Every structure is written in C-alpha cells, then in structure tokens.
Image (cartoon, rainbow, N blue to C red):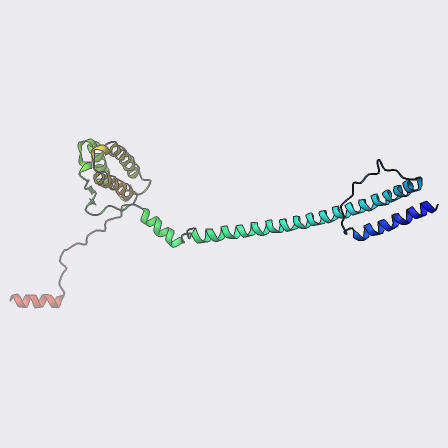
Length: 241
C-alpha cells in the first residue's frame, strides 16, 4: 500500500506539473503503454487516467469542431454578403455605362422630322408639269422606250378621281417603274455612278409623285368687259362728242 500510495503521489505530482506546463489547447499525445512494466495498482490508475483523458480529448476536439464550424459559418455569411454587394455594384456599373454611352431615344418631333427627311422628293416643275414628264438622258434610251411611253400616257391622263396611292393609274405606273429599276440595275456596268444614281432617284421620286392625288385646277375667270355705270358712260359720250 505504501508503494501504491507513493506511486499515486508521484503520478499526481507529475500530472500537476504536466497540466501547469501544457498550453490551453495542447495537441493530443500518442504515447502508448506497450512494452512498459507496471504494478496492478499502477495499471488500474493508468487505465482510469486514460479514460478521463479520452473524455477530455473528446470534449476538446468537439470544442475545436464547434469553433471551426462557427468560423466557417461566419465566413459563409461574409461571402454571401460580399457576393450580394459585388452583384449590386456590377449592376450599377452596367447602368452607368449604358447611361453614358447609350444613345438618347429620339423624341416624337425628331421621329417625325426623320421620317419626313427620309421620304423621296416630289418632282419639280422642270421634271413634271401639266401631265408631261421630262426624263433623264439615260432613261431616254431605246431600251426603256416602251415603258417610258406607257408611263407618259398614264401620267398625261391622270385625273383627280384616278390618282393617288392605290388608284389604278398609280398601281400600273408603280409596276412599270419597278421594271425600269430592274433594267437600270442590269445595265449598271455601262453607267457611271452619277448616271445610275440620278436615274434611280428620278424613278423613286416619280413613284412617290404618283402616290399624291391630283388636285382640281380652278377655272380661270372670264375677261369680258363689264358695262360701265351711267355716270361713266355719260362722261365717255361727252368726251367723244
């Protein structure tokens, strides 16, 4: 018993020194009891100590796991926060970029002006007057003669009732103009760029002109002399006498 008591005292002292010197989060010791001689009492006490040590190590590892989990969860929250902030910041940058470089939408007045400017010109009085067309020199060539003569006939017989977009005369002239454009495109190699452009533009303006309704021409007032008043007649007669 004295030996056992002395052994326990030494073990307690050694344990106290070990606990006093060990850090708060000491690593787990892998020391084994194999190939170590001891008494029955020492073996019992070492077994009890190992059981207590196992419980402590389990609690220690569980606490480390809890700390690691809490730290991982905190970092997950921070990452989610950072993701949301980065996403919003990127959207703001995209909006700023679009606001800076995107063209401003046209107003209604600008659209109307743009549409008006995009329309072809109407034929001038030098090109079309009193139902007679003055063709460009390229379109006076014999290859266009049948189409040109038919358009001249239709343009000369236009009337307020048979004119405007959708009228029989307009639809036939539009078909003839399209045919002339096709022929003009086929002969593009034999024309200069200005000749081709002027001729095509004339046909485009001609087609646009035929879509307008022909207005009634007001009758010219007669120029017959009116009878003079009685006073003016007497003065004239006295002058003659």
